[in-house]
Structures are given as C-alpha cells and as structure tokens.
Length: 553
Image (tube, rainbow, N blue to C red; front, side, top):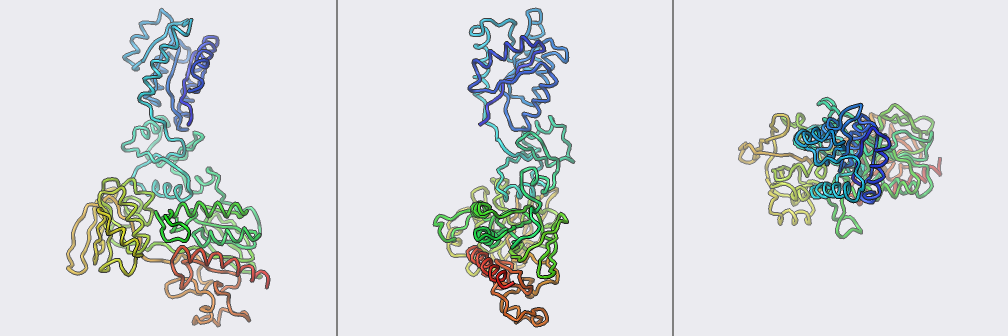
C-alpha cells in the first residue's frame, strides 16, 4: 500500500529544509514527506497525486508566501483533498490571520515559528492531527479508475474490455460518488470528456477508444513479424488451446482477438463441468490461465484487433486488420466463436449498454444490488449468469419461451436454480419492449399462452440467446451451412458447392475449411458441440492438422 503524504510548503528554503528534516525524522516510516518552496507547484502536484489514487494526510503551509497566502493555498488544496488535515506555519504577527483561517478553511491548527524543540512544540501537534485523520481514513483504491455515468454505453464497453483483459479497475459514478466529483473538479472535466480513465501514473484518457487504452496498458496491437506459421483468429477456449499447442510445438504463432481472451466463455461467472476443476472456475480465470500459458511458450497476442478480411495467394494467407495493417501466414485457424443474438424488440437497441446487456453478467452485477433483473435464455450461460446475479440482485427472473429448462440446461444448474430463493423462472414468456428515460427502467413481458402483457420494473436485462456465428467478415471465401457456420472436413465435399470449390486430390482434414490450410475450431464450426471442453479439444487438434498441412506443403 502506498504511504499517505505529508506536504510542506514554505518559500523560505531554510525554513522548508528544517520542517522537512523534522518531519522525516519522526514520520518517514509511515508517511511520504514532500516539500516545495512554490505554492503553485504544490497545487499541481496535488492534482497529479489525486489522479494517481494517492492520499494526502496533512498539508503544512507558511502564511506569507509571494505566490499566494498560505490560507489561500490551503483553501485550494481543500478542493482536491477535503479530508486532509491543514496546519498553518506563521509568525507571531500573523496569529490573527491564523485564527480567522480556522473558520475560513477549517484549519486544524497553527504553529508559530520557530518550533524548537520539535519534541515539545511540533510533534505533539502533528501527532494529534494525524491520529484524528487516521481515525477516519480508508485506504484508497490503487489502480485504474473510471469516472463516468453508470448507464453509459461507452462506460460499459470500457469496463467490459478491462474486465475481459483482467485489468482490475474501480468505477466511480459521477452522479453520486464524492471521489468522482473531486476528480472531475480538480481536472476541469466536462460531460463530453466522460468516461475518463485515470491511469496509475496520474495521466488520464478522456472518452478514449479501446485501442488507445490498450496501448497505454501495454497490450500489443501491431504484429512484430512479417510471416507466421499459423495465425489464430479468436481467443476463446478453442483459440487459446490452439495458441498453447502452437507455441509449445515451436510454430511461429500469432493469436488475434477483437476484444479480450476468453470469448463468450470468458464472461461466464462459473464453469462447473470442466475436467479437472471439481469446484469449478470462472471463465475469466480459465482465460487468464490459458493466455499466461500460451505467452510463456512465446506466442504473440494482439488485442483489441479485429480481422477484416482474408486473401489467399500462392498458398500464403494475407489478413487485413482493423488498423489496416496486413500480416501473412502459412496457415490460419479460425476460432471466432459465436455472438449472442440481438433482441430486435422495441427499446432494446436504444438501451444497449445502459441497462440492456449481452452476456457481461460479471461486469455489471454490482450495479444490480437490491434491484430486480431479468435473464433471457435457457442455456448454461444464462443459468450461470442468473446464479451469479442472485448474489447481488433482490430478484432474478429467467425468461424462457419453453415450458422448462430441462431440454436446454445442464441438470446441475437447474438444481442450483431451483434451490435459490431469489431466482424465479418465467416459462412460456418473452420480453416485447424495454422502457426508460436515459436508461432501462421497465420491461413489458408477454405470456405466450394467455397473450397477456404486463409491465415490470427492471434494473437490468442480461441476454443469453442463440448462437450467431461470427463469420460475416469472411465474405464468400468459405463454404458455410445455412446458419452461417463454417463447413469443415468431409462436409466440404458433401456441400452442394463442394466440388466447385475443393480442387485438391485429397479429402479435407477433419477441421479444414473449404480453403486449404485454413482450419476452423470451436463454436464457429458447423456441427460443433458448443461446450468448453470440446472447443479446447478442437483447438488442440487444429495444430496437429496444421503440422500435417505444413509437412505436405
């Protein structure tokens, strides 16, 4: 934990050296002692310290300084650190001003110069005010902080990005958080600047793009090599497994993801049926372990970077990225997975990121405290999300069109839901409208048997429906099934256009797409099992097939 700060200001260098020496001799083990001869310099430092998430315990200021009076300095410092103690250093002739300052700037004490011996005239006073400060002190959060509005799509996307990339952060709501308001005032922030990300070094990013945040946090968004043995697109379980095996087997491997490692599985609050983890583990924990393992084997990871197109020429695959850069590879593994389907109903698009969320249960759960929330979907992701939200929300409703969860959700999850008092299943129902002013406030539900429509108060809605493959970016380069999933292996030849596309003498490898040397694994592949374990297995298998392809070519 960072030490709280004691800051002394006096334009007389000799006096300043004396006070600094005395303070260090007594308090340096528990406090960081700072000193300056310039009041303006001190005020700039105070703002920087606030931005870094540091805490000021005590300001000591001389009264008569050329840049400003000590009382004026303390009054300005009060804006940034209102809880800090304030002590005025003054000559006997200025005691009237010091007494007046007790009321004007809530002065805690004034000391007459000189204060020798300090054991009698300085330390007892400082001990007393610091003891009082400590009694009301709570250690500040040290790390990334986001200042913004709770129901802001941009704020939500930044929170989701940081959580997905496993960067701890603190969200400060500008509407009701005192620290957020202090940071806003001390940095002269306006509404158009929000959300603002405060970095640990004290710098700040106003309404930033995700790529800007990524660069500041040291994430890679530019490829280091011109040619790779294999490029893996998508860092879900399948892509991460492929990266681990590609790196461990000595292939020059590049992993690319448009957001963060983990994919949809990374947003899961608890995966309880994954082999080797009897107590279960969160999706973010699985992603953290996997990306650490992959990078240890020397793979290169780009995020947040999106692949816009693939071209094939002379058996080399050229990928065009969202930053317009191009990278080449001998082989490609597509593991882009699926997106949750959007609810097209009235109000849903308007409130997306402002009360309407797709997945993201772990990111926004704390905002649902003591509220009523709705989960749409009957799969395992929906069940896991509902269980997690039940720890925060007053009531969680699971909205499904079917009669029950039996045919769509694992039995262990159904058992957990049935024994959780604040979760209720709403069968044969659907949400037809979202209502609110600047954010979601209510939902309209329809019972599909009776046709009855009812209004319900809602803090948030979390949508976990359908499996839309993330393949639109591939254009017409690949054969796909009727739902847009990539066709692989023998199914390439069985496809109605298979003979027109596949011109090789051999049958496609099990996970090979209709383009030789490009493989698909995980949920993006037609016929996939939609389970974390099977995705990991396919990702691992894809590297074995990459080796075979490279050996033959």
